[in-house]
Length: 434
Image 1 (cartoon, one colour):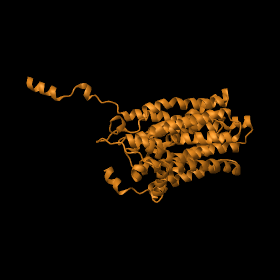
Image 2 (cartoon, helix red, strand yellow):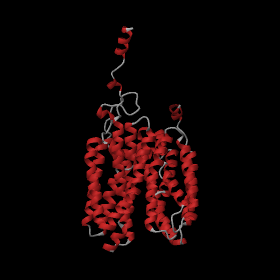
Image 3 (spheres, helix red, strand yellow):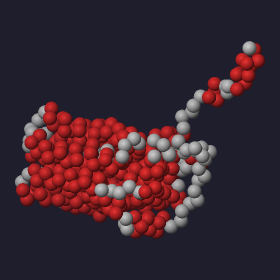
Image 4 (cartoon, one colour):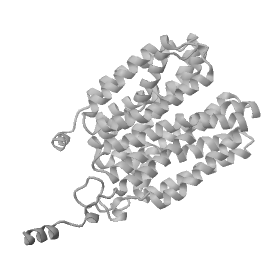
């Protein structure tokens, strides 16, 4: 009896060794979350500057809007090149430089006196910096640090990007209303610089840098060698992916995603609500509520993506979004009422729930190049947003209301649902899923 007890004591490891530690990957996710939500907040400022800059400098809204358009375009077009640069120089260096560029662009606006300076600062510099921390950054972190829970992680990081654009709008608009636009620009610059030390100290490039396996991996994964020719690789991956059907289906569905979120609701919901005599502050608060519920919806979508077929999830998301847009014209009213609140909560849950399954399909189709491919797919998202932001205003001027815009966008979402269902599954992924 005594020998058996002693043998058991020898076989059992001490409690301290059996205690499970939190994997370093989750700390990397936390730093990435803060960085992405900050980058999204930086992108929300240009739209708030339109009226103050028009009043102070007498610049036309078209001129100011052109700078915002450059910002949006570069946000999408920079992403695939940034993903390639991260493969060449590492995540930490690229993100630290991007934050510094944002701080420079935002800070310099305090002294600008000409419209071309706005184009340079907020259009070029902030666009390049924020684009380097777009969702392709999230895809790179997810691919390197996780082999399990990728859907959940991509959902968390996507929520940071989408919600940051909306949640910070009330705060930044309050600063501009109470203290002018310059303190808001300085706040953005200081916030960007404040994040740099955390990125440099805590955002490791690869699990091998700290002697760990990726989360969920069975074997240790060595750090890959730097990939030279970042720009050439980004273009090579694009030309290779463009020869496949799934790329165009993914790009097309994601363009409709951008059209029905950033381009449509984020840009035109407030003026459409104002057309129905709803106060601007109430409409802006409803957008902030969308940002809050987006966190829940996108994280839940990531959880679903780990468990269900991503094609079917995309089809469901787009179909439900299209139906909700069809009902929006009859929901707009001078005051906030329960059916409108239901629409806002639902749209928040569905805002960018499409990102985790889209990322999963990119990984399935394109493997190690999936982060760069997703960067190009994200560029189509921004192109769709830019087109609808412009065409929605033209439709409002032409027809006198936004009704045709809501109905057309609902039809586009229905088309996106069908496109998602016809994406063919790679032969090798069937065995991997089993």
